[in-house]
Length: 114
Length: 114
Image (tube, rainbow over all chains, first blue to last red; front, top):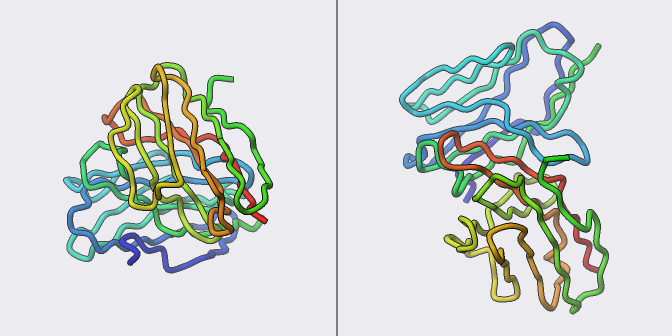
């Protein structure tokens, strides 16, 4: 039973346009959410996070939106750049600010076309 | 290089053999995690150490798996009597505390069981 779902295995976007990656979760105990980015042959790297007390968090070109009632979060990248091409994982934790047991989605491969 | 390092990067073994992976976390990080990632899936939590104490183990960690972190520095993950289903990428991560939930991942050790 997947508690964190990323239903789009892949997404292609033109350079300069917006990329929107989506994530759904089922466990209502989750209250801290993160996005990680992974390049081939590298480990995942942290990108951005959001606590359940917020509905938006922004860091430069990256913005994460959280809709608790829908149990849905999304990552917006604008403008998209070719260097953003990577696999993006969303992750969730039941303890705010804790990394003790992150549950990851299966990832979305983002390709930004020049 | 002050990142998380893992060794070996790739291990090919025959079914029934034992394998051991090593992880050296970022030196000032007291928390260390092992995750497993199979093809097309996100990382799955295996176990977590705070200093030398193993505080959590996933039910994925069967009795053929054992992890240690002597002296609270590097960690080893041993798999005994390997099975083909153990083939996966084993990821180690470290963090300095629960404040952000951000994990710093190594590049992973890929296990192939023939």
